[in-house]
Length: 262
Image (cartoon, one colour):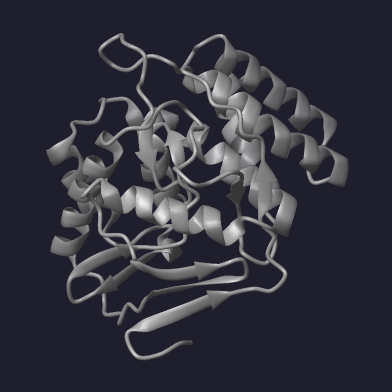
């Protein structure tokens, strides 16, 4: 819990550097002056003290403002796809009780980064655990080949997509709402594709998602075909969920792969 106005997040079993990485990500995102980010009061090897958010019901106008702020955060950019926030030495993704340490492999090209540092490593772990079968593994390999070939590297203007400063784990549970609007928590921040955060918001049904997207597009117009790539950006988190939780996530990942190689 913590003292009034503050919230303590801790886990004595968290891997070394986990909280330093998360705190660095929160500060890096906040520096953009875009979306509101929960404030970091202090940090240690085993925890962080954060600003407390007194939650209220999400509002449509607050969702629109969040989308607009998120576009500004993305526009702050990153040095490369996969670039870590200053002060972070390892990339983690997943729940605090079992975060995955993923390769630090920054690249100027989205496809190369996404294949090498996100999709391939998790797919290999899934295959080893039996969470996906050989046919699914082959499908993932085809998607990764297309990623490396640059199939999704260009934007609507024909220019290479530039790395955005993304939250990286922006599912609905990592967006809190108070009287001042939306507050983003628990990032897996890095340089990434700007559409990735929007795809993650849609994965588990963020409240007032349409208003979030409208606010985003007001600040940074989206390509008309951006929704065609939602499955691409959801593939990585779906594979992570298949690895950690099983259930129907493998089937959802399989459907995403099938649509991408169809």
